[in-house]
Amino acid sequence: MSTPVIQTHQLCKSFGSFQAVHNLNLTVKAGHIYGFLGPNGAGKSTTIRMLLGLIRPTAGHIEIFGTSLQSNRIPILRQIGSMVEAPSYYGHLTANENLQVSCKLLGLPQTEIDRVLEIVRLISSRHKLVKAFSLGMKQRLGIAQALLGSPKLLILDEPTNGLDPAGIHEIRALIQRLPQESDITILLSSHLLSEMELMASDLGIIHQGRLIFQGSIQSLRDKGKSELRLKAYPSEKATRLLEEIGLRTWLRNDQIILQNQQIDPASINQFLIHHHIEVSHLSQYHDSLEDIFLTLTGKEPQP
Ligand SMILES: Nc1ncnc2c1ncn2[C@@H]1O[C@H](COP(=O)(O)OP(=O)(O)OP(=O)(O)O)[C@@H](O)[C@H]1O
Image 1 (spheres, helix red, strand yellow):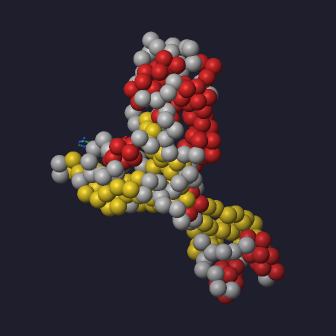
Image 2: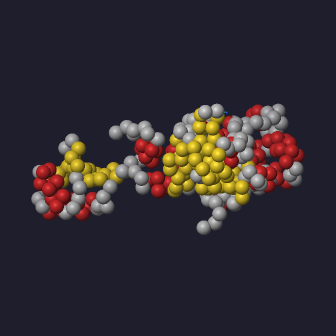
Image 3: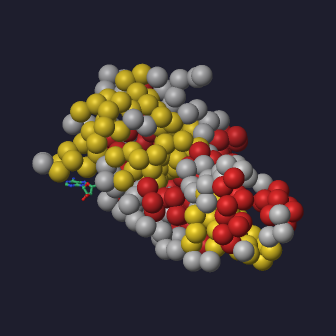
């Protein structure tokens, strides 16, 4: 397996006596879109600020591109593009002029401007004043700025915050095509699971400063409960027959429940009918990702 782009080891951050981040072991794989998810105040921004060398960890350490951030700060940061707060611009300048300023500050050639404006699809608005941009366009310009110098890693803190559905769609489409088009790894934070589900390949869920899940979206889905719900008459006989073939059953209201068992609903139906049981209802239920997320973060999903 190739070296992870980001690997944190027992990363901690305290502010006075308050521990905002506890023993975080993040693993972000090359070429992946890693969704860093957590409710407000969970510790996402604090972690991102440590990854960008903006604040020092209280304990633990960070490896980026396989080397220690502490001892290789400058060369590592040169290869990271980021947008951590609402991007700031000169509203009275055009998109092009804003990027010219950034290129000068970073010592980059002006040819970079067209390249990044093409990527974020703002090339036709390059001579427009930024104060006339929509919020979505401003966010895309922020991502363009972060892409100057062809970084290998892009870190975006809540990139869709405050955007309307059309703006969210534009940013999502942009983020999804970046790893292939620009050979880049992306870590982005959000408090919205629905958004992460559509954008990220891997998830890290942080809650009260602790990483409570890390893995693929599918492995999160697999944590959910699944049930087969039946209405069958006479129900005592149906329950006995199902137990006799080794299935565990529960009764909920007038339904027979079979939980998390590898069973084929069609075979169960056939089996019961064969034993002269009348099946009036049979349905399959799976926890949604939202339910799983709420359970993990200690909030009971609504039935
Ligand atoms: N400089 C600071 N001094 C004291 N406490 C801080 C400081 N920065 C963050 N915190 C606290 O650390 C906790 C984590 O904050 P953080 O901003 O990392 O959360 P977050 O997950 O990014 O939340 P949000 O989605 O609201 O931005 C919060 O309780 C916050 O109040």
